[in-house]
Image 1 (spheres, one colour):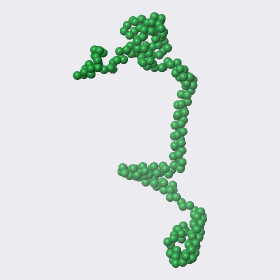
Image 2 (image 1 turned 90 degrees about the vertical axis):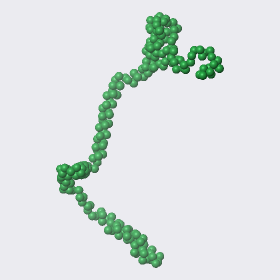
Image 3 (image 1 turned 120 degrees about the vertical axis):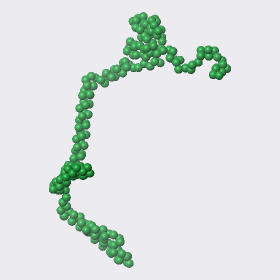
Image 4 (image 1 turned 45 degrees about the vertical axis):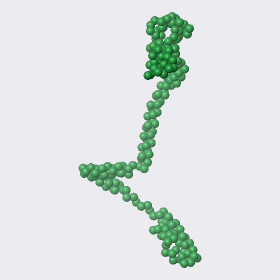
Length: 233
């Protein structure tokens, strides 16, 4: 009430301001007095709020028990709509009974459990990697080129020289099959072969170089410009 009176005194449309508008000096005195009184009332309102005891909450143990009884009665009614209302009341009762920081505590607990599970799964993996020296092993494998894949255009599709012994002539033992006279190793140029270094060479065929060309008859080799232009007629 004191705050409401202060608001009325500060309102420029109150009766005191309207009556004193006929004279500026009178209006000044009334305005200053009203503002001073409003300020004093606001200070008094703050003091009264500090002195008065806090208003008792309506959420008492008896009220909560009554609400729980109501939820039980609704739940046992058999009506679907009333049972839904009973579920809502149960959730409200759980929210009231829980401490203010219950949600934050629960979330922190779940986060800590996830982090603990991650640590339990990651630590054995790290220990195994350290015991088996996987980091250095992976680097050694990369340096050895044992897993390097050779493209078909990086090697000869068919050659008379041994792929493992440059300059050594091989002899033919079958279709696209040659053998080295030094170690008698067989090389299959069509299906692929493996070098002594462990690298695998994919197979191929020289005829594949022209497999995608246009179907032009061999006689076209001797055509002149006029004959080639008239070949589609």
